[in-house]
Image (tube, rainbow, N blue to C red; front, top):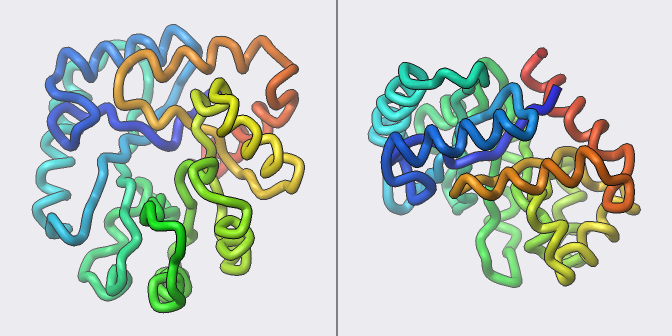
Length: 223
């Protein structure tokens, strides 16, 4: 069973899908390549939004897409949360975790250096009972990843990044170091799912690790 834990499929919830038609096209493509469950993780930026407004927008989009979904794919609620100073003190922060779980998908800032004040937010979030998943770690350097590993976090790579020579070099290194936990689409448009077609058939990219990462995704959703 293929489970995608990082996607931007909800209509008008963020910049991933502009309308219901685009969202349905994403779902149909995901279904074509074998996805059976998908976590909808629209971006949450604490400096632009409140959790209350975000949840209202996300849940409205979720209900709209769920009502129109005829693919058989099970959709779960979630969020991709930008890590910022003070994030852990926000009321209702735990509501941004994956539906019926304590797993929170975090996006790190794009800066090359992360200060200790920012990184300590990870510890504070963990103290609330949240298990942290760092999104698309192939965007970050080895030094940054080594620093994150000190915080006992889980990690996710983007499937389509395997077809980028620069990112594939990093991903191969991280896989060999056993720091990768999940693979996901991070879909913003329907063709992001095409990567699954090749990963299911080819053992030249990540081999049996693909099944391992999918099983990890199944386990956190209790499937």
